[in-house]
Length: 359
Ligand SMILES: NC(=O)c1ccc[n+]([C@@H]2O[C@H](COP(=O)([O-])OP(=O)(O)OC[C@H]3O[C@@H](n4cnc5c(N)ncnc54)[C@H](O)[C@@H]3O)[C@@H](O)[C@H]2O)c1
Ligand SMILES: [Zn+2]
Image 1 (cartoon, protein in one colour):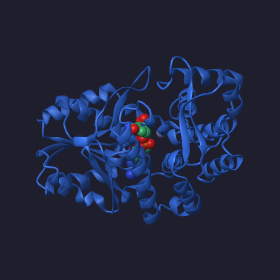
Image 2 (cartoon, helix red, strand yellow; image 1 turned 90 degrees about the vertical axis):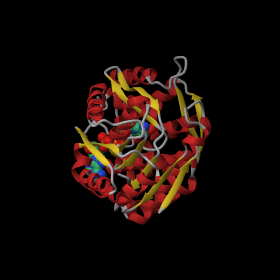
Image 3 (tube, protein in one colour; image 1 turned 45 degrees about the vertical axis):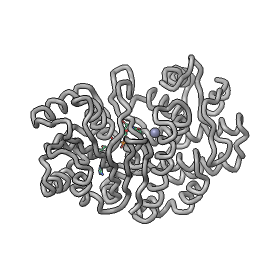
Image 4 (spheres, protein in one colour; image 1 turned 30 degrees about the vertical axis):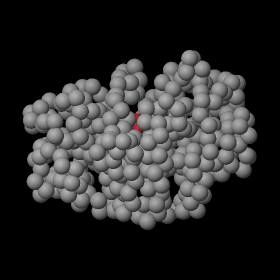
């Protein structure tokens, strides 16, 4: 088993990464001295596979869980669903020491995390991420929240879980396209902070695509370490944490203009990272060889590397980029790479260069 610790003073917690971890949930919750009553929040897909064993495990360990299943999909990150969760927590009489288990991908993690952050002004939560994206990214770091009609993640809270259990077995049931989309975040960690990891992904891509447990454990573990380190240094994104947004400025805008749902997040940021690599070449002199390695790795992972836009769509892309939360005083800022493994944030990029690379 790999363990990674997120260092945030008295809010520090552990991420455990291994196969067969679900079985340890009861013991882990007992060790954390959590209350007896609890809620499992899951969605219709993750729930179909894992709700029953998790429920039974908690009952077997002496807890009294209520199961809350929301529809699968981004639409469940809404205040309406939050409200219905609150109602079910209240009906089950959850109290301050009670806890929430988030069992699912990033949607469930963000939703359940937000419910935990706000119910009774905050009750403990345990994250059990069941998508690759959630294991390496959304379950770690305490960003929780839901969407408004006006945009994604506009309501939320920084709220750290008490424990994260990444059971690699849960990835076995993940649809292929979702798995590959998660790899876009995995590759991102190599680019932003670990050239060795990038090389390891290049060499072991076929094992990763086969979801070989040993390779997955090493790679997921390293990604969690990087995220934990960044979050430990800059929890609320006043600086360094911005590096996690490599490829996301263009990626978010692509998701936005193409209507959420056409591209999975991982696919959009794959295009975004290839574009950011090309911009990095123009602005920071990222070696051509590195740009090629980045583009090739996304392609080999079965991810899109570019998007063709007509001029009206390109205009929309710019408008969307300017609406992004990360815009500073109306100017679009980018995370750009100097080398594979080293990035700089808050980089100004002239619009004409963005036009050149988003072709
Ligand atoms: N909080 C953060 O720091 C952070 C970071 C990145 C992304 N996010 C958020 O995460 C969300 C995306 O997360 P995601 O990609 O995990 O999407 P998701 O939660 O929608 O999961 C993808 C699909 O896989 C299904 N699924 C989940 N686990 C499964 C399993 N083990 N087997 C079979 N099917 C399974 C889900 O039901 C869904 O249909 C977005 O809302 C995004 O905003 C948050
Ligand atoms: Zn992302």
